[in-house]
Length: 225
Image (cartoon, helix red, strand yellow):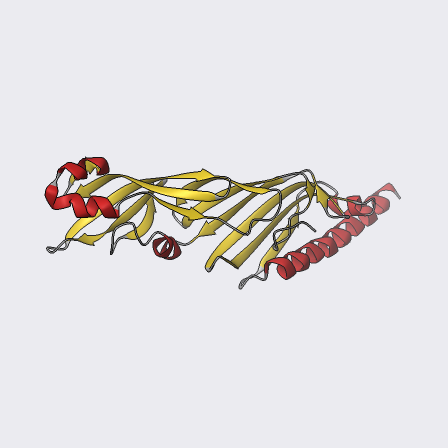
């Protein structure tokens, strides 16, 4: 009898959990309107049964191809202690932007340079000058709560490296130095309670990390719902 009750409880939990995950994914898809699939997972033990008492628990939602600010990104959100009323204890999120789009957004950083990532650093590489010399520029990425700034720090030409600031003292390179001024990109349309906390260059693209304040779960329209 005990084994039967345990099996029924487990089956009920899985059924309710699956249904809840589907509802969360559908709601996220409606808000984010992504071009790709949306997945939702309840990560708290017995999450399905918790929903019967108004608690969903911890939730992870991922969506591919979310379009914002003329940029397409893959988004993952992790919320703690979510309730069926739509509140949460806060959480974190990431948005991964492909390097083709990063190149377009920071296009003023050296004409003809293409963005990429290596060992956690943002790299801009390509050919410059009349001779088309191969150049690699290493840059750091810093953030405020609603913007990130790309600051070129070192440049490598024909296997030799120098600080970008040193280019100002070379008459032949002064034009290139002017092109490598820091570039700030605003991250607008953030939902209420969401703030940019950091950025890092990963293999798959530039990963922007966000904090999410406790309260109503954020919606895609800038408010909360």
